[in-house]
Image 1 (cartoon, rainbow, N blue to C red):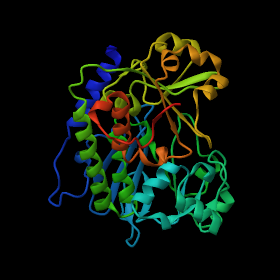
Image 2: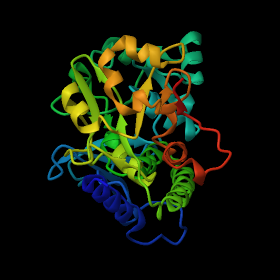
Image 3: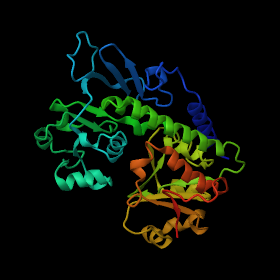
Image 4: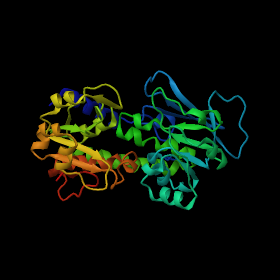
Length: 373
């Protein structure tokens, strides 16, 4: 057993099993004390507004954004703290990512989306149909969206994912509030899911958001119990090289936590950070040449085979998982992986348990990952 992965699993267990605060009388709306897993999000309720604070995931000592959510039918009160005012429930929204489009779909608010960036990456039926019918505008690349078109369609809110040391360019100058969805930088899978409470507040769907979260939480914790006492924890390698680098999940990422919760020993659990770490092929080979299992995600119209992987980069053959035919793949162009698992990490956890400990889920048909042929 690698101690890095063991520690990650232990921390994940502590984070996932230690809710803080108490429910309000109705038991349906999250207060600041009730955020149990998300580390980058704080919600506070005042008489005339709700304050949502998003921490900088790259420097947790500072605030990335403070949002003041105010009923759109009421006059903003005086003496507000400093922050970005957002009139709620929101409408006429522009979405940059398929993840946030899928979350809005779960909240039943797809009619509020009037524009998206990079729709070619959004394998979501309502988005594709909206583009075809003209109900949803294609605003181009997320790095340089069509700002004039955004203004023309009457966008009043943008939901995007922040990146370190980057900006939103001209969009920042047109006065439209930008919701910085840093959920993807959460350490715990349920922490990422818990951000739906924030998105629920934006759309006036607090009760639905809370119920969706609690259903996922219950399913996830129940699955994790299956691996609590496993004796053998297979070692796992993730992803493959792109260009000159191999990006692996860092040790504090939600993926590292998922591997631990699924009963595996993640070989790169020692790497700092909550995102991905670029490594040289030789570094990965040296550390993971004897990995028991190799997980690969790809996007292509046909199923990837060992022959395809060999043709892509012959040195892959040097890994034990390649030689012993123990690679599992997920074709994100065929299954809604990115659209589903941020809100439903229990779906992915079930697949991973099946990969690492199939005896715990007899008869299970995997949702995302399949053994490479």
